[in-house]
Length: 376
Image (cartoon, rainbow, N blue to C red):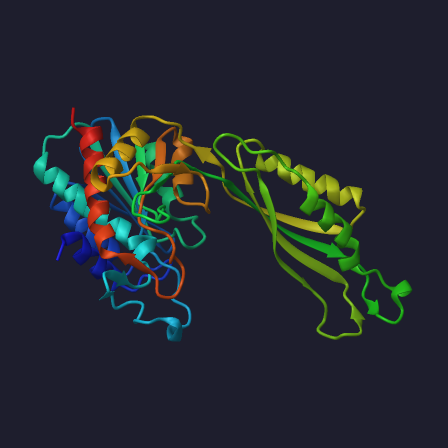
């Protein structure tokens, strides 16, 4: 069995539901240390992080990943137990198989093979793992990056092993992500009996015209890298549970996935202007969890595209779609950041799986990228 597959199996069997690491990083650290990496565990709060580096010179290529996984959900929905790493019909099943223990395993084995063949490579290789990507993401990568910046360790290139592919391994490279802004809005009215609406003020009715305006609003038109900014309501809640009571307040949660044509401050100001326009009595709390970023074509994208072409026989496309990743914490440092990993069709689902053949290919792709960037 290929070493990448073996390592992925071992990682999946470690039940590391966020923010628990459960020994995953120790396993990776031992493997990297045997290849000459300096190991530095960094714990913030209840979150385990690992920083490993081989070499002292620039340029620095960092592999970024996470060892935590989302909960498995209803076990009855799984064909195989989620933490037993079952191989069936050419697929490796288990929670975290695609998101993202396959990527972590492939990155680790690629680094080992590269160092064994090229012990005197140019530049440096970094490895950053966290157990806080699937959770609040406040004591993970962002804290490690702050630590690196205080030590003036500058990242030139960052490859995130998140599941970026759509139909074939390596067919899509994420070269950016949209920003994410969430709002938690409460509209206040006056509770009363439904038979006497003139003695009450229904906050749901008050909000309805504004909701229609928000849905119809064009926030921007996007650009060459991003689709237009989107607004989505994700949760609404009101009422006492009784059918004859007008509620006294109405809560709505919403999210913007926004592009580089607008800032989160502009979106907040626009929402608050509309709230005032509709004369609503409200309270709003904002949570900005990530800035948009884009990596334009440079050495990292060129190396990744060429590596996929050589290993897989096809040219990957570029995309900024999908959710957020910890790459958002690396991009503001000035590094070129991309995401390249396995197929994402089953992530966060029951029966999450990754094709065994794709695991093998992924390690070869990462190794080829190392060769293109750190061999001169």
